[in-house]
Length: 91
Image: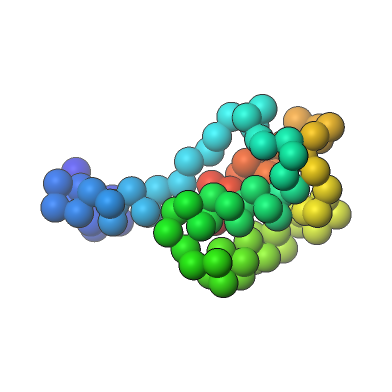
C-alpha cells in the first residue's frame, strides 16, 4: 500500500506523517484552547514549535476559528468541538 506515493512497507513513519486523524470531538482537552490543542498535536506529529505555531495560525484562519481560538474548549458547542477537531486533523 502507498500513501501519497510513499510505500508503507518501506517508510511507515513517512506514510503516517501524511495522514490526519479526526478525533472524537468529545475527546478534546477541555483545559486547552483550540490554539493550544492544535499546536500541541502539530508538535506531536513532528513539527518544530515554530512550524506548529505557523501551521496552527494558518488552519485557524482557514476554518475561521479566530473568535474561539483562545477560549478554553470546555463548554463548546458540538460545532465548535468539531471544527477544533477538524483543525487538529488538518494541521
